[in-house]
Image (tube, rainbow, N blue to C red; front, side):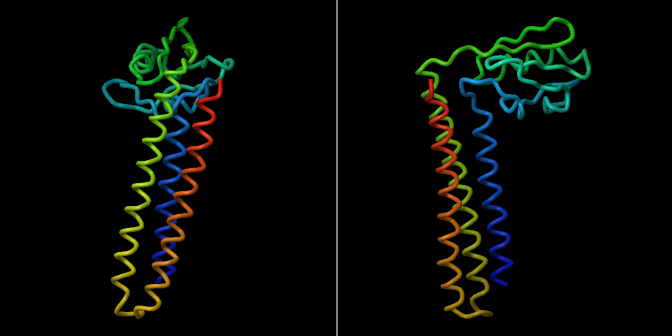
Length: 184
């Protein structure tokens, strides 16, 4: 029974770590990557639709992206969504078949803003992991009558170790992203 609780806890904590890493990838560094637009929602005929479902996104060079819409009628909507995207600062242009997005250079002030955003996302992930830990602890407490206090106490110690391990993964990913953001 304890193993089942731990399988669930580890899956949910791993989900929080992966979500944080995806959030980090969507924060812009000095280079253009398709991951920047991965979570962009485009108002497509009144329905919010993820950009990857409407177009292919490719790197053209280090500072620009090339977006090829599957439906040419969606070009204006895609351009508007990119213009409205916070923290991107790009102005897209189209030639009738593709959209080119050139990213401006990052200033030091802007880089520090992005570091704050990433730190906020890391803290959100840590909070999610702590919530999973709290819920796991409650699940273990519910098993106390069946298994005994000693087994539950050992499981709670193991839960703390697992929690620390996942929080360290988030901290490592944060350090890498912070170094990447501050690299000129």
